[in-house]
Image (cartoon, rainbow, N blue to C red; front, side):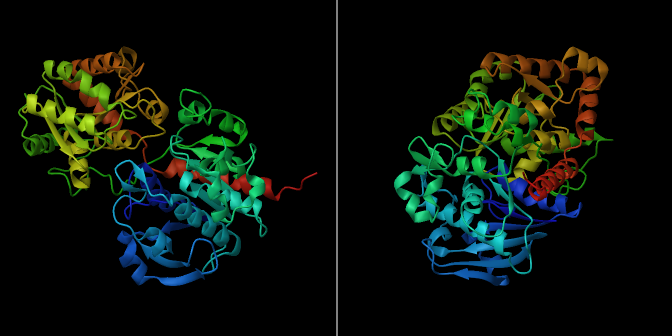
Length: 485
């Protein structure tokens, strides 16, 4: 089976969030089950060395998007199709923003071109590769299923994965003529959205299958509290919707062989983590008692991630004798408040603004617990890294966080099955209560070690989820091939 991924990010080449990790890891897992994947990805500046080593396999100069060419290359064990269009993608920094909070004004053209070329390659094939499935990822690829459905050519089955429904790719209707998209789709049953048009709605409406990144998030998407205005659109296609959990790359995230750790370890000997904790405390200049837990946060610093709630409970955390290290960037007011907390409690709280991949590994390998207080979380990956590394997740009971962490309540602790801590509702008070519970369990070294061992035994790789994707692809293809009345 051949599958063409169309995506705007792919680790390790360009990453702003979990989308990139999924697009970079899932193809490797699918390959093990006989699914060949090629990834259509914009040729951002970071990919220039890969482009230089590849070969041109498609070119066009007659579209509204300007000259386009596709270069095939293999890098990081991935088969890439790089959309080389300097007028659209030769821009440094964030792939979507020209400045803080300011989208590039031509994002409709940039990702319209990605979707347009994706549909062409899916129909016509490329470099001897004829896709059975086009798999679009998030709004940036959302027009690809619409191009397939609304323009003539070979029928190709399409799938779209919603990684975060808060991002919908909404643009003014006056821009539609620039995209070479048939205008018969501009209606309430197509890609029209309150007088504008939406890339994501196009994908949800026209794709043969819709997936999202956890079973709970799939249910939440039809709830006005989580649907961001799309709940009715998704509910109308509920029968085509599946929730498939994300996984993690077990080679990249492996505490037994991680070069970013001071001391590697396994679930059979998790106490070797203490050397990593000592290094982490030294990195941030902390001084904690050995019997006090060290929490960490690796996150975008936004209200969606619940960081404001965490800041509100920091006095309570410090009063318990615990420590906290934070890595991330985001809303300026939250950055300022976190810096102020680090200045107020310099031996208990450390903050590093920005992102540092090696440090994120050390934090998972050295902190005792990772706090993820998100107001909504489609799947989440940091809690999966935490499970893998025995850094017990303390999470809000929402989305994929609810699906992947077994709460350390009294019954689960007595049964020896707990892997972390959940809290609800998503309030500062409930978060503070969960931190208190974690501190209480940490004082019981036997119970905490059992939880670490349980956490590290969890299946957080892609094997199970990749099998679910393959089954979904096969089901969609069988339906497409079935005779219709």
